[in-house]
Image 1 (spheres, rainbow, N blue to C red):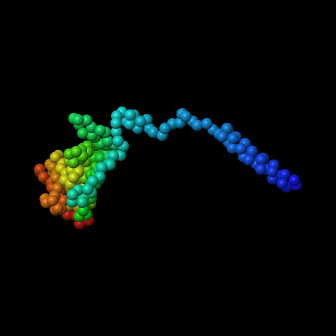
Image 2: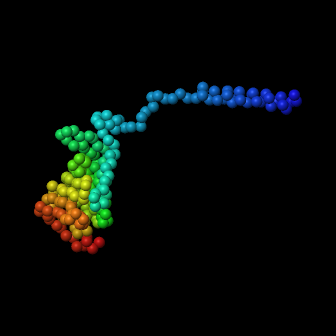
Length: 199
């Protein structure tokens, strides 16, 4: 056997053994796993989550018989009991109507009751329409199966016409396929600003 063949035969054995030695030292010398690592949650978040059952970022979506889209979201929700409905924090809803307009509703808290096809908005309720009307109130009850809502208490509204206050408000259609109307009643006071409507 010549020198070249002898060298190749030695390398066939030596190189795999060297590779095996390098691999084993890599695993033997590697760092251990830190089992005491800190979980990236704030202490308040952990306390809130362990206090009771909750759902983070719940989402409800549906379409009315007419084709209007209804989407309801919240920051978090807690299940209800037989005597009280489920509650939600930072409740928001968007209604996109087939004929082109839209409503956006938000509140501090609320309740979603799919069994009764209703969403209750409570605390700093704000309604924004696609044509620039902004309505604020303390409570709003909105249907989940159609474009209907009512505010049983005082409302304030502002838009291109100026500002108004009223004792109550309803959002509804006069006929099944008719356009959506916002009706203010119970002592409506309108402050018309012609310069604002020209802008």
